[in-house]
Image (cartoon, rainbow over all chains, first blue to last red; front, side, top):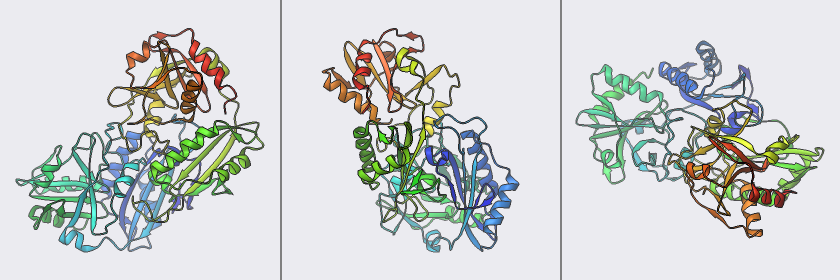
Length: 268
Length: 268
């Protein structure tokens, strides 16, 4: 682990990342120190920094630090955390912010391969996402809603929970973005009021464009998800997991989802 | 500063308090190591632990740690932070949670006395509080809304900003709770959908009951605050600050507010 470029494993107990969740993060896969989906990760990181008014670190510096922590690992989970650092007591953003940058890696065997191959069982979460356009889309450090949603079930046969917003629209999984297929069209919810805009979501939308698959960002109700021809969740570590079961609905084949899985193989 | 009872000033960079804002805090005043308003602080801390499903620390232990960090200081700001500690990667609350407990103190000269004496200038914030009943009232570590609201102004003549929720009701200040007086009655907004339930708010409601001042928890619209006979904000460090000006409204005397200020003098 590197803290502001130096080996370490702790941060100041006064850091605003701890005090207020005043920061953001990304989780990604690296192979021998090379991050996958970097184009999208970097794009999202830079956008999130802008939305939180955090200074964005230098891209080449981040890549060097990822290589440094993950080089020895064939396959690693890399986590980047950026916070607004220290500063005087109180909520106000400090003048002359000195951000804290944490880059860490751990060896990773990958998720069970059958999730991508045979699909997963998902559930509906009771925990709703609050509507907050100011923070929507950002992978910030205020994640108590996700913690509560993920704590609704312990059954390891359930791989993901889907979350609605307070207005009743389906938004995403606790740790993934959601897509459905309807009449040959790829649909995914907007992330303008809540939710996290993931790098894999961006990559899927890009792949769909390259494959001339029509795709649209549109609000979805639970019944529309249950009635979909196909549905899948995705994130940078999981890739694409087709939904095999959600509530009473079962799916058995996923032709368009398979097409996207194949197109994204290789991952970057 | 004590971290889990031991002198220190840093925490693990993998702590869930940093990763997800998965924890809570209290800020309070201590005199020679004795915390003020402790009855209410402890009540709120215990309630917040229950709402976040965090193990609540032993009260006597906390009091010993506060005394230890603040004993040498005539007047100190004490901060208590409790997090869900470490644990495996991912949002799920870990089995056998080992919380992190941070108790720190710093010397403090108090806020300028004229704020309580002559009242303050407050403003309306554009940043709205999202509606999330699951977390409402808790002083948790997901505080980006407060950070954004407090960053809307830099004019030091403005002491506080008042925040509305997404539904348009007035909830609180960025770092304080709000009361108004209307027709001899004390009114304060409910904190059932958002906001922080402060120890001083509880203490004010208790004082009002003791003084036989009628008090009610009721949703308030901005126009009702502007039309109030008196208005004040309060927190554990500030005590009670009457509002002298809000937007176009000016107040010049605060008979019931003064009554409460006097009743609460002594502070515990």
